[in-house]
Amino acid sequence: MGRSFAVLGMGRFGMAVAQALYEAGNDVLVADKDSELLDQLSSKITFAVCADLSDEKAVSELGLENMDGVIVAMGMDLEASILCVMIAKESGVPYIVAKARNPRMGEILKKVGAHKIVYPEDESGKRTAKLLSSETFLDFFDLSGKFAIVEMKPKEEWIGKNIRNLDLRRKYKINVVAIKHGVQAEFDHIIDPDVPLDESDVLLVMIEKNRTDRL
Image (cartoon, rainbow, N blue to C red):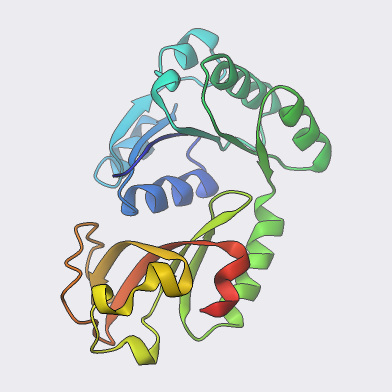
C-alpha cells in the first residue's frame, strides 16, 4: 500500500520527485504558487494546491500532519524553505527532506527540523555516474539516505520468468512497485506476479542503495 507525501515547490527537482513518488503508487500532494504549472501536473499527481509557500497560514492549511513525508524543494528561497520545514516539523511529519543550494543553507534547514538535506547538482552527478556505468538502469532516484527508486530493464536471465518465481525480494532485497509493458506505456502499480517478463518491460523497484551493484 502506498504512502502519502507532500512536495512543496515545483521546480525541476520537485516535479521529478513528485512524479516518481506518484508512479510508485503513493498519494502525492504538490503545492506551488504557479497555478498554470499545477494544471499541467494535475494528471500526474494526486492533489495539487495553489499556495504561497512563504505564507505561514497557507502552509499550515496544507494538512502536512497527514503526510508520511514532506519534501521541501525550494532551494533558492531560504526563508520559505525554513518556514515549510518548521511547520512540517511542528505538524509531526516523520520524515522531512529539504533541498539546499549550498552546505550553509543545508545546515540551517537541518537545525530547524529537516531529517535529510539534498544538493541536486551533487546528486545529479552521482546519478549520472550510476546510469552510465549500468546496462540495466534507465533512471535512478535517491529517495532517502538508505533507499533509492530505480527504473530498470529486466536482467537477461529474468526474461520469460514471472516475478513470483524470480523471488526478487529474497534474492536481491528489492520490491517491485510498478511495471510498464513497453517503454512508451504507462506504469501500472497493480502487478500480476504470474505474468512472464518481456525484454520490452520496464520495472520500477525500491532498493537499498548499498545493494544496487548487485543489479
